Image (cartoon, rainbow over all chains, first blue to last red; front, side, top):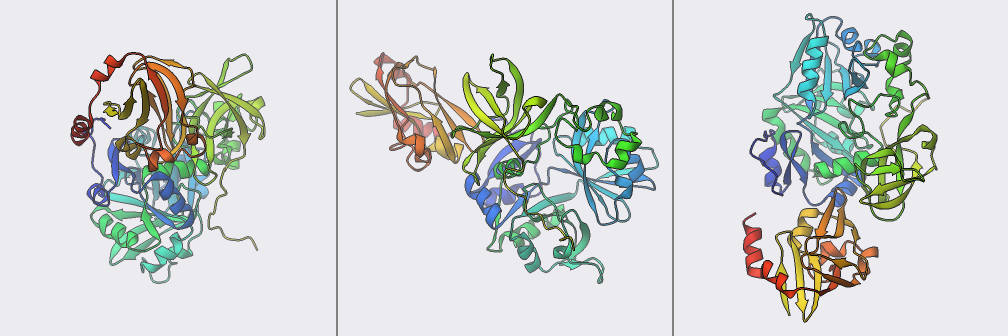
Length: 380
Length: 123
């Protein structure tokens, strides 16, 4: 409540959020809306209707130049050179020792790579990429673009009602996109980059819009009955239910991809090539040789366990730690993510957490805690 | 019967030697949806400023300190099943615990309603 808000940067929609009654808090160096009507109500609204999130603090980058994908592969374990135009891949930015510097989305737009990186890490990411990528690759930081996420079962219907056109007449509409596909569009003459993606586990879209038009677009969206503005509080509880790690908490420079339970991001070709930063150390854990693993936890009772609580063994010795924890509005029970020793990582294993001197019983749970509802092409 | 307030946004209602303690409406508003309240055990001896309870919202845990010293004689059992009482009725049904005051002079450190209101308006 008394946090210093003097040196915080303002996002394009800062005043707009305040006008809607948002409570603003410092996050990633910006003043951002944590909630409007309340985390619980906003969370449930997103799971049943459609929520609009301002994620303009995230870094939007372009990598331009021949061989950009090959160059980025040096510091990521994704098969980016095989990424077809219009497709998106989740990948990891790796340090020379294999530690995870960030997690990010990479889109092949057809003429360059478009990256979305975390807000708190974007400046470090840019410096690292500039140092690692050849000079023939241009890195642009799109600081004049806002990023909105529209998420929830009614997101597609809401977006369809806005009347967005493809950038070229014969290109698909935004609602024709499948999960992890992207394209270029026009709305009232405003260029939009739209991805069918998000971080809530629901169907939805992420919309890159020039900052000067962000308010017009956000206002048009919340004018729709099924769309409410949603704060960072619900964004965190939604991604936790979806089993998605939060960089800086569940995944850090001290964690390696396999132990972070992100082996899916190590593509087969790249594992075989073994030529990305930190590959030897990363692949030494693959597929099941990590000593610890990020798992989901169901917490007994009603009291949440929080980041920083420790996993203890029968003798009270610390053997792991909770990296995210909260109360699941959907399941109406506390859930968490924790690093546990590999022999305790099977679903159903009983775990003891110690928090403020109190022992709390937990059970290792499959993630996601709440089923994903992505819009995927059904296999014929 | 008189009600006192602390700068940690707790209220203390004093009747004779007994004090009922809860968090203020302002505090519940700031915390948001409350999903769990950890109250002290009956019989616990609390010193002024000791950790007395923990309020958990969807997002975060917050400590509640003992505004005054005393022995806990009763806790609000209703909060176990219905922690949301703290949101809907922070200053009445959402009380946390009662204690027997061990030092009534500590009440002089607290604010009255008018002073607390001025304190909140200044935040």
